[in-house]
Length: 93
Image (cartoon, rainbow, N blue to C red; front, side, top):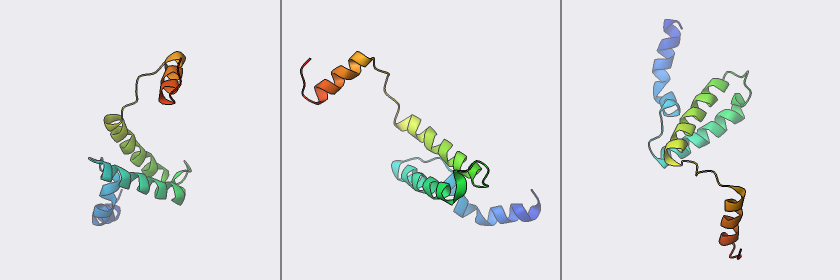
């Protein structure tokens, strides 16, 4: 990276920083979700596109937030899942 590129990055950092800063609350997380949708629509879904790296970084930030705030439940057996669904729908076993 040359000085001109670095100068440009520094001049635009206030616009880019929210995309590369880990969210600390649901509002910031939702803003990242919307940003990722826009990045993907702009070409970031194509791994050969210049925005693909940005899409991956934003996705990683979202994944880290999700795993810390919305952990996946323990896996259920098929029998447990069926019993849960039956209970949710008022069916007796």
